[in-house]
Length: 380
Ligand SMILES: [Fe+2]
Image (tube, rainbow, N blue to C red):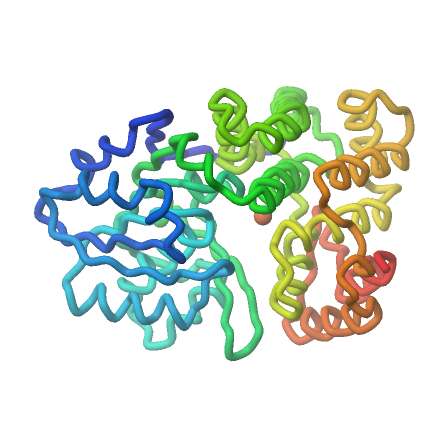
């Protein structure tokens, strides 16, 4: 097992009716920015519940955070934070709203004039941030209990992640009932995103960390088991609760302790979203099997372990096929052809982007720009 430090300061309020708990957790003297997305929270009752909970607080609403939250939109929110002397950010929505909240919280305290530097340096230059609380309405990203965020910049077609321990939410409310009205496509996307988050921390090489392996496998197994149920019965509380908690456990940093991590699928997938506008999970489902196939020898031991324990198959290749079949069972395509995207063009664009940034990824730092292009070229 590798050395690690572990600290997760986020308090989780899990279950129906828990939104009311936010009031006592936000200091009364702080002005609150109530941040949300396109208005789905106005239809599912969450907006009203939050307003009721905030009735003793001074708050300002900011809506219109888009999927793949834009830097440009976040900067408008930062201006309001400064003008209104906001001291606390309450993000209500899915991972995009939560990620935007993290960037706004950091950018509002950032001393340099160019806030994009936060993304360029992946958060290493974040010295301070406003406190954040969240009400999660879409299980997927794990953003409710980690210090990660991904922000897109429209002007340059870039999509970059940052991490800072200063942007972990102070609390996150996870009420499965808030997810009952989600479109099935978003649920499918959430299942795949959470599944791939586990894989980025698991599908590398063995380091004698059997507990982390089995915790990761238990999240995978639970997702596989609950996926068809929660897609078929959106209002089944038990299934939604299981899915919601699984997505949090997939990326609250626990299963990644002391093990090598990959993340090349995410980094390549971000570029595809930036260039082609595909949903985050859609790009992951294309890229992940390609990364595994490309790294078949280096990942063989873990692929075999996963195949045997999760799917009851013997070989690494069978494990990859089973994974693709699982995605297909959720009606999630896994090839560029499903989106009429020219594979060589995509491979070329991503190679160029990574070359410009001198990027290399993966647990062995060998996913070079050329490797990324080869991986994409294999996914026609
Ligand atoms: Fe993700």
